[in-house]
Image (cartoon, rainbow, N blue to C red):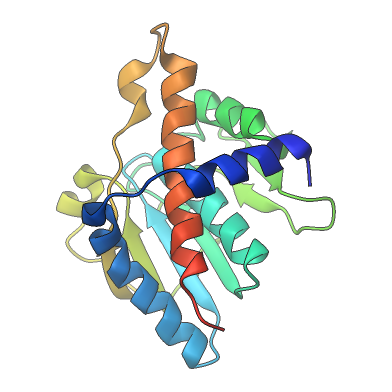
Length: 201
């Protein structure tokens, strides 16, 4: 693993998580634990309106946390509109220490690696029911209020769990842009590592 990524993960694991946030994450933990207890793969689809920032961070960090905790999981992301994996969020993931390769120009696919021998995490903007995602038997993790409020029904989802995050887009074009993207990425990382650390194999 890239030493920078290891440092980022270590930092994420030491971030305090409020009791309020832990309560929100408890349903998420219970869903994963039930799947593990049943010997089934954990399928998670992180959903946000444009599938460009928060849902991508969540997919990447959840897959990384699952892999490093030895939990068999398949993490996806989607939205209600196709845009692209925002370049600012991509740059934040690179700063965190992930190895990233890019394929294509319009709504490119990014292949993200947390270690040399890991399978790539494939990230690109898509509708939540895109063929790249699990069609059924997944938990829909709603990472933004807009998608949560405007998608009352997610076909194929066996659970719907709101785990909302503030959008770093609010800081686009400001001096705090990079700092705020990294801050949101680190918060999501801390919560994903917390969730998967609670799973008993």
